[in-house]
Image (cartoon, rainbow, N blue to C red; front, side, top):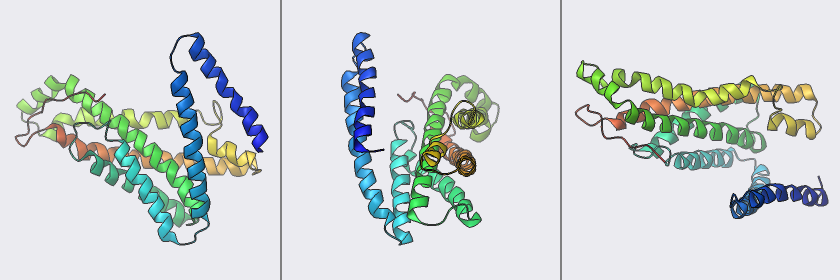
Length: 253
């Protein structure tokens, strides 16, 4: 795609701006700001990646992945409001999910340990794990508030905090992973995923693109499951005090 084609394609943004104006949604400013931010951020990232991909030192590759994980962990803070050490928990969980998944891909030979393969794939792994963890945190906050009596009854009957919260923990993990599973169900029928589409547009054969997309689907489900389960089980104790009593819980905004 040349610059001229990109400029013509960018006129599509006029449509949501017009809809917002016509329906009095007051979203024109946000749309324009979001588009400008996207262009600037992508340009910066593109420049950085071009430099990084030229480096063959694996330390730089690991450093970039680590920076991704740190940023993802920080971004889960809002969803996990009220949870003690939420950023640390998110970091450990995403790091574990990413490490296990990427290690399997590298050892199996599906990926070479070079920046132009590791960084984009790790980005998908980290971002999906971050979203799943955020969903789990939100459900934990909501459930411990709305099901307070249920948990307290179990505690009064002699259950420990893990047993009393078991239903909420299972529900939170399930709710967090379901969107990823549902997305996998519709691949190739409802949607052609970005990676597969990108490879086809780049000239790769559809069969080769399908193989890569299958790999991506497996790794996203795996990493999201590992990270969500770890984060959920590491964070639920924050809802109880040292006397094993349920604290006053507030719903995250």
